[in-house]
Length: 107
Image 1 (tube, helix red, strand yellow):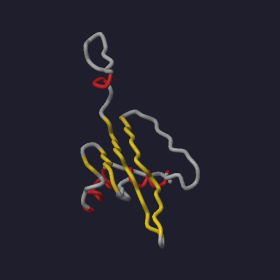
Image 2 (cartoon, rainbow, N blue to C red; image 1 turned 45 degrees about the vertical axis):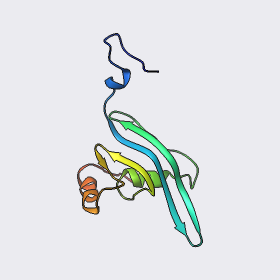
Image 3 (cartoon, one colour; image 1 turned 90 degrees about the horizontal axis):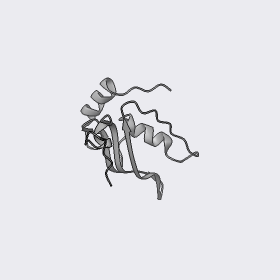
């Protein structure tokens, strides 16, 4: 079902464009004889002006998600887009430029 306004435009069309879009993102870390799944099938959309918090238990994937959003790591599978740049498939040079020009962290 699509919601429309009286002007005939959809509610979605009136929202700011997504800054980040994650689709079916997984991140698996190999560890000795096993694989640790930090993220499994994450779908998130963050738009301009959104205030987002990430919370969860220890080992729940919070830091992993932030590393992906900050172009510090790549997903095992899925799409991580910052604007039109897919951070999952970007070259190391492109990721360096994203970190230098687009993303900042305060620890």
